[in-house]
Amino acid sequence: MDNSINKYVLITGASSGIGYELAKLFAADKYNLIIVSRNQQELDKKAAEFKLHGIEVITISQDLFDPGNAFAVYEEVKDLGIPVEILVNDAGQGVYGLFNDTEIDRDLDIIDLNISSLVILTKLFLKEMVSRDSGKILNLASVASKSPGPWQSVYHGTKAFVLSFSEAIREELKDTGVSVTALMPGVTDTDFFNKANMMGSQAVQNKSAMANPADVAKDGYDALMAGKDKVISGFKNKMQVGMGNLLPDSTLAHQVSEQQKPVEPGEKN
Image 1 (cartoon, helix red, strand yellow):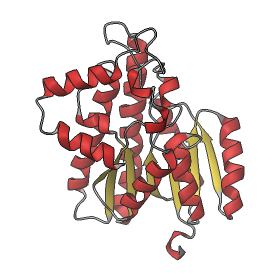
Image 2 (tube, one colour; image 1 turned 90 degrees about the vertical axis):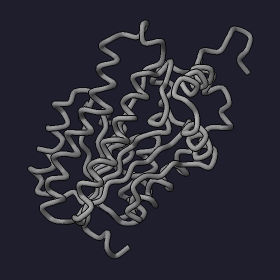
Image 3 (cartoon, helix red, strand yellow; image 1 turned 90 degrees about the horizontal axis):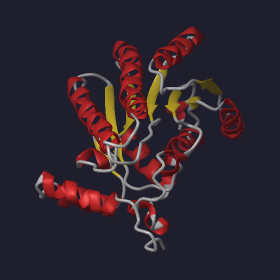
Image 4 (tube, helix red, strand yellow; image 1 turned 45 degrees about the horizontal axis):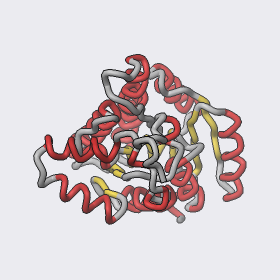
C-alpha cells in the first residue's frame, strides 16, 4: 500500500490477542508501528517479528491501568516528533464475579483501563488528527456493549461507554477528515478470560465456538479502513445483537446471566 509508507499506527494491547493480530495486518501493509503494552520483553519479541516486514517499530512499555501513564505514552510519542495517523485502543480487561463479591480496587482498575486511558489517548491524539484533518481511530468495544452483563457488570458497562463514546465523537467529526470506528467482537479465543478469572464460566466452556482473534482483527481492520462507524464481528454475534435488540433489558440480563454463570460441579465438558 503506497499510502501507508512512513505513516504510523499506535496500538495499545499490541502484544497479544486481537491487538497483536491487528498489528500484524498493519505491518503487512507497511505501516510503521508504535506498540504499547505492559511487558517490555513481549514487546521486544513482537517488535522483532513485525520488523521483518521492513517497517519501523517503536515499543512503549506502560501500564494503562494507571491513566497517568496514558499521558506518558502521548508525551513519549510527541517527544519523538511522530504524527500518529491511526490510533487503535485495544487494551482492555474484565473482572468476573458478582458485583457484590468483586474487589472494588479491581473494578476501578478495569474502569481506568477500559475507559479513562482510552479517553485520554483518544483526546490527545484526536486533537492532532483534527488539526491535520487526517486520521483514523479504532476503539475496541464488544457485543457486551449491547446488553447488561451479570457476572461481568463492570466490564459490560465499560464497553457500553466505549461504543456510545465512539459513536458520539464520530458524529462530531463528520465534517472532518477523521473517522472513528468501533469493533464489537463476541467471545474470542484470547487470554482475556484467563486474566478476568473467568475460566469457570459457562461462556467459555465451548472453545470451538470462540472466534479466532485473527478473523476479528480482519473485520476491524477492514471496517476501519473503509471508514465505517462500527462492525459486529461474526454472523452469530450479529444475530445475537439483533435478537437482543428485540428483548426487554430484564429478559436480556437474565439470558446473559445464564450464559455467564459458573459451571456447576460435574457439568464441565
